[in-house]
Image (cartoon, rainbow, N blue to C red; front, side, top):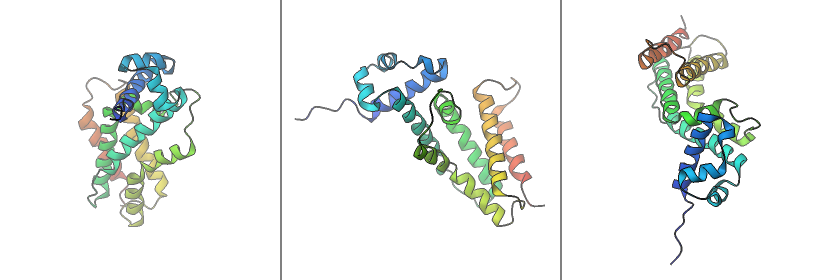
Amino acid sequence: MPRPRTHDENLRLKLLDRAGELISADGPKALSLRKLAADVGTSTTAVYSLFGGKTDLVSALFSEGFRRFGLRMSGVSRTGDPVEDLVRLGVAYRESALADPHLYAIMFTRSVPGFEPAEEMSEQARATLAPLEETIREAVADGVFAEVPPEVVIVSCWGLVHGLVSLELNGNLPEEFTVSEAYETALRANASGWLRR
């Protein structure tokens, strides 16, 4: 009978989540492979077996964050109304960030000095924004949105969502700010602002 595999996908995900939490809470210097293994109840051998080392572990964190993010974004059903679709995509963006805040900084900031995603990883990350890009490009091409370069609308929408989510994750919003209501209101106002007059 073959030996059961102990270095499986479940352990891999536990290690990734805990590594992200350590970096998120205390910075990249807190990521010790020995501590990571102990926190998850495994050995450093398992960490090396699954990831190869700290650099590969950070690369895996980046890829896993965008894998999860991409699933949420691609899971948003299109309504045919670009304003409504942009609101839905913005809500999915926020839900993804709130579900995995420990991965968000690794995905969208340079929180780990010296880490540069490989070209194919950057392409994977960019592909997760395809639903946003497609919605906007179609709305501009169909004359629903203003006749401006689609990239202007894409980056503006992404910037609004990213900024609000980052403020929320970092605890920089005023206490009286009801995030979910105000967030959707801001998304709708932004998307409506691109409609052709």
